[in-house]
Length: 456
Ligand code: SF4
Image (tube, rainbow, N blue to C red):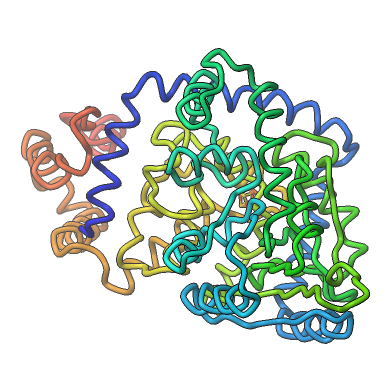
């Protein structure tokens, strides 16, 4: 078992029995559930909208090479620059160089999971560049020295009292501060920072091939300011974020809003095709297109649909495993069902295969996904891949091989009595079954034996 898997099991056990944690998560997810129910009412035929979105994403992935070139051609024509990063390290190096070339010492960032993926904040810090998260949830976890807990709501694991205490420690605000007071305080604090920052870093919810632009969705306006104030705007985006046309946004924007937060539309939706226009042409916009394992996943025709993900977070909120073990147990950038599906491809299967096994396979994730990714089936495909690549333990291989042999042969199944079978079950499966579940017991007589007796 990999070290990551051992830590995963240990932390899962700990977090699952943390009642306070469970209470906070259940409360926050229940708020989300109510909002989503309301948001969905805007659709007469949600299933048709989801199917259309899945089809567009399928088309986009099937011709990704063409759309990427189209995007680059159009974006360059608009005056922007495109950089291609094969992996996380390369993307971070490119961004640091861009910032250093402009002698920038402070950057403002809007929420971007892709920047988390390349560990951008750590790289910036190492290079003496101050980086400030400007999304409130991200700002809170940055203040706390933590990573985002959830791909849409990074501070979901914190109660309002914990946030008030954190602000009191850092800024000496009142320990009884309300969420409104904390928001107002942060807004005033960040306003100054936007004006001083030399560069703004954002992600992109979508890349738009036909107009050579990016679409950015957010609720606080901080993304807009991160793009508009600094002279240098850097976008970091995975290559899979591509949509063929700007016209597709009328479908994707409401789908993302409804499944992400339960809104009809997110508050701020921007389409940006070039840097802010300035008479001295000192502004620039650069899009860093990140591969980092995506093309490896694209090669797999049955698994590539995972790249359709629009990062709405709905599959996390509905997942019984996520709700119990929480976001940090995964120890990955992308958590929940989608994280368990893509992480073994974006990183190593050997180190991350346990994620695909940590699922009840209930299919709730597949049911809610707005782009119809068959998540629970993809988890099974990952499991199959892990087995065929030989990443299972010798004991597991031994058990699977021999139990298949026995179960395929009626004579062998009936060879031993129930007592012996129960002993075998306990010895070979007891530890994996866990000490919180009761192993099933073989009946004294098998169904086959009873059938024969009663029908002879
Ligand atoms: S897999 Fe589907 S439900 Fe999960 S985050 Fe992506 S788009 Fe949303």
